[in-house]
Image (cartoon, rainbow, N blue to C red):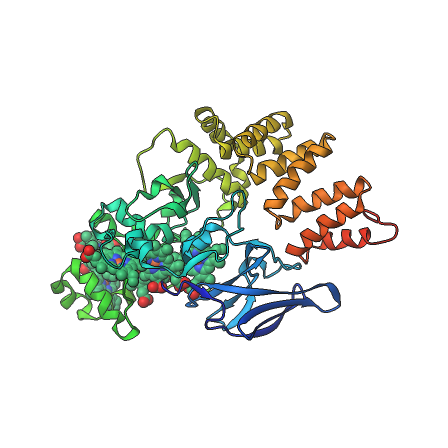
Length: 498
Ligand code: HEC
Ligand code: HEC
Ligand code: HEC
Ligand code: HEC
Ligand code: HEC
Ligand code: HEC
């Protein structure tokens, strides 16, 4: 875990390749003490540039992603290093992209799991960090032992083994669980969590209850282990550290006997001596590896510890194609309380954003209920506003957004969406005011900058329009509509479109 991130120069493999779909020629190379990612599309003078790669993310067991900064905003590179194939290639989601995305924000969640001593982003921004954005690469002692571990002498350190089971498990869970949805509690951030605290005070995880069905494989080691008979029967006595020593990773030759000892700590040496003829490697039969080696955030080793593992590794079905809605439940299971409604509603909302449109009515029902209970929660107000806006109930949507922004003026989505409503009813000045403020804090959200540019262009202010399109292109240089608008604006006379 010490190598979960680091300086880009470490173990760099230079590359030079063309991504066929976008026809963009990428080069990854080092000069003196810097690492560069350059991109150009032959024949397209608009697309040519380079970014300095600053850090790698991921130890390289499966692969590595890289981060670069533009104007203090931190981004994930659209090309990754894939260890098994031994190549650089587009990130999985962009294999078929015809425009290259240079504006993928490096969110706090990403850094919080892979680095230590992360600095919170500037207020109101998603990904503008102080320089340097973090003080230590990888997972340091403090991440599991608390700030006291920084003191070489004297400072009290948290010993996870001595915490109650929920707090003990939280130490690993902060980085090893994503769930179907992870919702930060009102006013809290997971990066503020410290070992010894209750993780559920910071974040709530949700999974599908139906995930227990065969075929719907668990995604993380936590979810999978929870389904194992070992864990179900042992309860709190079993944890990640029943098998893993966070300070020590066994070498390949020692691996089988290392884990066998862990199994036999519960199953007994006597059992081990006779079972399957006393054969050595328990995990080879009960915890096989799947082949999803390219997928960074899915377990490789089957932590369900099945009696007879199916020959097929667990595969994820496309839940979006299901007719009936699955049931979203807290993970780990917890007593229901009234305040949970907010987190559940926002969890459903996040599923819609990831494409599960069938969840619309259920999401609206929960958002309304939650909003009745907590009428001043900006995240709920903003989500409810969006629900109304999609249904064309614009007055109600506006009311929600205005209330949300009065409580938290830094909300980017609420301001952007309210701007659209204002623009559509002719309130262009107000729309531009809302958008400009949001765009200043989120310049990689091209949609916002393009909205402003179009308003200025239509209003006969090409210089202002050019300024905004140029800012869009600084962060997203291959955005076709921005490149095209800039050409029209640079014509004589300037026009807004053909
Ligand atoms: C600050 C985040 C963080 C915490 C806390 C954390 N892990 Fe990890 N862990 C990671 C990351 C990131 C990786 C992947 C490293 C990589 O391959 O890039 C990892 C990898 C691992 C691995 C694979 C082997 C290895 O060392 O790379 C094991 C096993 C593991 N963690 C167990 C644990 C256990 C057990 C705990 C709790 C005691 C824990 N982790 C706490 C972030 C964390
Ligand atoms: C919830 C914590 C969490 C978040 C958020 C997260 N990661 Fe990870 N990441 C992990 C852990 C843990 C592993 C190791 C997983 C395993 O081996 O099962 C990992 C593995 C990886 C790997 C593969 C490393 C290897 O060689 O096996 C890459 C690459 C990676 N993460 C990149 C990213 C990037 C980029 C982001 C942000 C966009 C991100 N991760 C967000 C926890 C996280
Ligand atoms: C990924 C999480 C993790 C990281 C990183 C980590 N530890 Fe630990 N550490 C643990 C856990 C869990 C235990 C309890 C192990 C057990 O007894 O089951 C522990 C136990 C200890 C203990 C024994 C505590 C006692 O009171 O007996 C010491 C000392 C310690 N760790 C020091 C360190 C130091 C120094 C570092 C950094 C070099 C470090 N640890 C990094 C998770 C971690
Ligand atoms: C913390 C204790 C503990 C550890 C560690 C543990 N187990 Fe178990 N395991 C149990 C318990 C309890 C059961 C329930 C059956 C029993 O009582 O023997 C069980 C059941 C099983 C079963 C039967 C599953 C079924 O479907 O009936 C298998 C297979 C198994 N364990 C394999 C392993 C292997 C392999 C390891 C090591 C990689 C391991 N266990 C580590 C406690 C543990
Ligand atoms: C019963 C034993 C056992 C328990 C309990 C266990 N693991 Fe593992 N884990 C393994 C084995 C075996 C491997 C494979 C190690 C190898 O191939 O070198 C593994 C591998 C991993 C890896 C590397 C990626 C992968 O999927 O192969 C991570 C990360 C990990 N475990 C995290 C956890 C976390 C987090 C927990 C607690 C929720 C946990 N493990 C509990 C046995 C266990
Ligand atoms: C060669 C493959 C293989 C190896 C190695 C192996 N097992 Fe098994 N194990 C099985 C099979 C197959 C079953 C199911 C037997 C059945 O259902 O009748 C089983 C069953 C079990 C059970 C359920 C109780 C029982 O006796 O049926 C436990 C517990 C278990 N294994 C633990 C272990 C442990 C611990 C190790 C390592 C010491 C281990 N196994 C090594 C194949 C293996």
